[in-house]
Each structure stands twice: as structure tokens, then as C-alpha cells.
Image 1 (tube, rainbow, N blue to C red):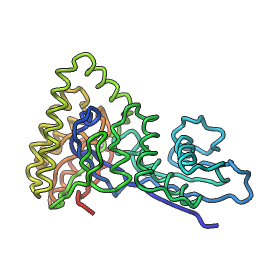
Image 2: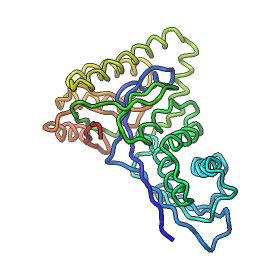
Image 3: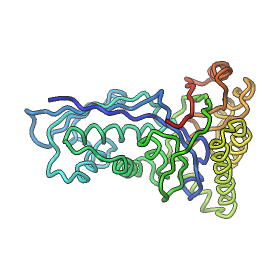
Image 4: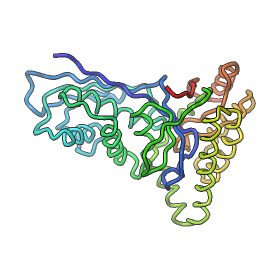
Length: 315
């Protein structure tokens, strides 16, 4: 029997981190240079319900029965089976691999879920729609992050730049003129749930003050959308700087992120900011095709464990 494979890209948030959880808009885009992949194979000799799981990058080789039901790899299969109304999960093996940094703000967990959902549903002959994939991946993200906004599963499922407001229909962002970003990875894992929880505690203690920061971040995201749709990438630099200052005020930056932001400035980037939950993970810098490699080199010299040059465009 044939193997069924599927992959899903990583993602970066351009504007709107943290505020998006509280109803403000955010902008995110797929990063096609990094991906999660799932390969599903039927096991004709296996007993129904016997699923062998191998996650190469996690050093995990086990069976579905041996994982807790709320383990992300188990949860995604149980949720898929329920959505497809399967009386039992067919005997199969699923192998997962990913080169998306874990706990780095690039959507590793959501990408793995999306890849598994597509490969597994194809294996059983009931391919899930994009809407179903995104919803189920979101439900798994709740396990990872507690109160996710839904932006990761959305941008990764549709693999297009999105303008996202929690609870509203997803909007594909129309990029009038492609622009270049350099991603710098601090190499520091920063679980999203921990940072999101800290921001929530700050909001509970001083809701009016923090709410004002969220609204300001949302206004920046709205202005960035206008600039992107008008093809005015040069306007994004100051907006990135403003957004970073507000994230710093929320306490989600770090010395490592600030060091990379400063290195990007010194190399000619007109704007740079953290991307994702913060306190580690990745940052992004606005670049041109001509100076992107110079900025990337400066980030590596400043301690980035890796860099990615990516172009933001509408597919």
C-alpha cells in the first residue's frame, strides 16, 4: 500500500504578538524554508488501533497506546479519528520530522499537527478540509499553550500571509510588493505557554495599563497591513521599532533578543523586533535583497545560532 506524506511550513509573526490573544489584530506569514513532515503507512498485518509513532527530532519511538491521551502526538490522532468518525484507528505507522526550531516562536507544534492531520486523513481515505485541519490543530495548540490565539494553526494551514483577529474569519493578506526579512534565532527555547501566562498575570494586575499597550500594538498591526497592501515596505521599519518597544514594555524581550535587534540596526536594517512569544526564540529584521546577507552575517556574529532569509509575498 502507498505511503501518504504531508508537510507544513513554519511561521513568523510580523506584528501583533501577545495582543492578538486579547482580540487585537496580528500579521503572520509562512516560512517555507523550514517544514514539518509526516509520513503515514498502513500496516496490513497489525491489529486495529496499533499505531507506531516515530518522531526523529524528538528521539521518540513509541506506540499510540503508550502515550498519554493529552500528549500532542496522541491528541492530534485521537481528534482526527473523532472528526472522521472512525470506529477504530487503522493499524499504521507515522513518522514525523521537522527542521523548525522547537519553542522558538516559529510554529513547530502547529506545523507537526497540520502535517500529521493531512497525512493520516489521506491514509484513511477521508482527507480533511483546510478548515477542519486548522480547527483540529488549534485544539491541539490548547494543550501546548493554554490560551493560544489561533494564529499559528491558521497561517500554517493555509500557508499564506494572514491578517488575523481572534474569533473572526481569517483574512489572507494581499502583499502588493514582496519584501525581505532576515530571521535570527537566539537558540534559546522559550515555551509559549510560560510567556503567555506571565503576560496574562500582568494584565490581571494592571488591566487598564496593559490593555492600552495591547491596543497600541493592534493599531501598529493595522497600519502595517495598510503599508503591505499598498506596497510600502519602507514604512514597516518604524512600525517594527514601535512594536518592539511595546513588547519590551510588556517584559517579553530579553538581552539576547535585544542584542540581535541592535546588530541588525548596525548592519543597516531599518527595523527589527522579536517574533513570537519572546524571552528567546527568534527575531526578524527588515532587509532588502541587496543587504539581507550582510544583516544575516551580523546576526550570526552577534550570537544567532542560525539565520533564514525569507521573502514575504502572496502565493
